[in-house]
Amino acid sequence: GQNIDQPTEMTATEGAIVQINCTYQTSGFNGLFWYQQHAGEAPTFLSYNVLDGLEEKGRFSSFLSRSKGYSYLLLKELQMKDSASYLCAVRDSNYQLIWGAGTKLIIKP
Amino acid sequence: DAMVIQNPRYQVTQFGKPVTLSCSQTLNHNVMYWYQQKSSQAPKLLFHYYDKDFNNEADTPDNFQSRRPNTSFCFLDIRSPGLGDAAMYLCATSRDVGDSSYEQYFGPGTRLTVT
Image (cartoon, rainbow over all chains, first blue to last red):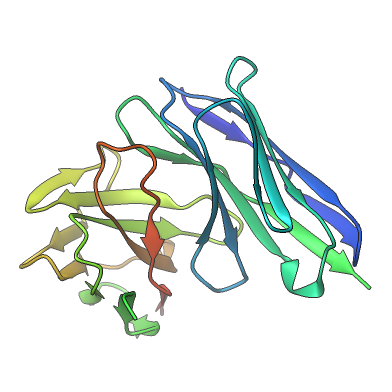
C-alpha cells in the first residue's frame, strides 16, 4: 500500500528553527508537496520538490531525497502565525496526490 | 482575484436528508477535486473531474455523487448523510494532471454537521 508518515505533533519556540520530517512509500514518484493548514481552514501550498536537494523560499525550505523516500520542511525564525498543521503529499505514478495526516506545529512564546 | 469559492462555509443537515455542497472557481483550471477531511486526518480524495471526465475513487461510498455542469462549477451531493459523514469538505482545482509540478488550489471548505 501507499503510505506517508509524519510526526503527529511538534512544539517549538518563537524565533527558533524547526524541521518537520516526512517519509513515504508510494507507487512511483512524481513530486512532493508541502502544504500549510491553519485550524478550520483549507490547505495552502508551500513548496514543491521533484529533484533531490533543497528548495528555499524565504523562511521556509524543503528538502528531498528520493533514494531514501524522505523529505523535510525547515521553518526558520518561527513566528506565532506559523502555528498550523503541515501536510506532506506525494504525487504517485498515476499523478494522484497521496496525503499524510499532517504534523501539528505548536509555537510557544 | 482568481480563487476557489465554496458555499456554504457551514452546513447543518439532518440524518438522511440530502444535501448539496457547491464549489466554483475563477482560475479556469481543468481539474476539480472533492476531498473529505476529518479532524487531524489526511484529506481523503472522493472524486475528481478532468474537464468533464469523472473519476471516482474506488472506496468512495455510493452515497456521494458529484456533478460538474461546466468548467467553473462543481457540486457534491450526499444522498443520505450519516453521522459518519460529518467532516470538512474541501474543493480543490489544478491546471492539469499530466504535469507533476501543478499544485492544487483549495477553497475554504464547507464544514458539514449531521444531526
